[in-house]
Length: 302
Image (tube, rainbow, N blue to C red; front, side, top):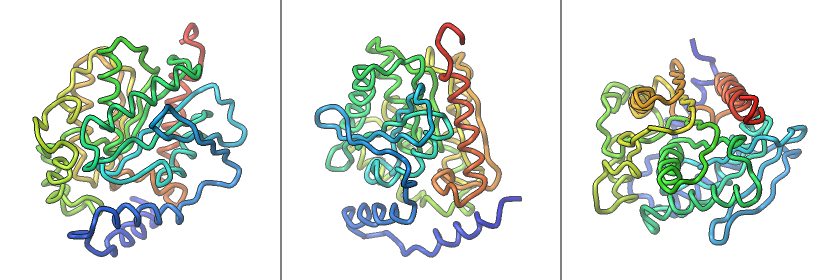
């Protein structure tokens, strides 16, 4: 049975007023204000950095060796969210992985539709390598839309011949912008986070024209051959469950070393609610162990 804290969080989410008809600028501003309720610990070092035109930020928790680099791409449906909204979760992931974490503010839709965000994500990764990050000790990750963006980034890097990171971490990734998974229907009543009726509209904000099955837009349809080992964490009470389970199946069929964790009763990107939610704390600890086991030793020792 899930912790009592989960029910408190679900009730808080359900109490939110409808966002239908609210201007996108207001929705973004409210998400930024929410970040104030989830502050980063005072002892986490934060530094602005990044390639030209792509602002980013380093997060270095106290006591970490920093031998591992985590490159994080935030969620928000490609139209909201930022390094700031995800700062606490990213800092907790960094601490669990004994790593420094770097996140970027990629351009958002609809003002900057596909492939603007993907271009920025790729630029951020290449900038990390230019700064001396070792791909063999680098983990790329993302939540929700950021998880889909991480998979698209890996495809772009692979096709360009760039060195790939040691591992990938995906939290409730949005990988099917057509919303064809059965969980869209079967988990609708259980999911307090995402309204499926607006999913296609959000997808078309990201890709106004063109095929939503494009693997760089919906990585569910990607060729996973040669991609790094992968950890997927998803909740059982979210409409995007099948976005994770089907990616797991396709990645495994392509020979990727992939682990899928389906967390009972958990909601979309439940890790965001750490440390308030015990299940989120435990999931981030598992994520950290995964990162350390696959990127925390010199390449010759793995």
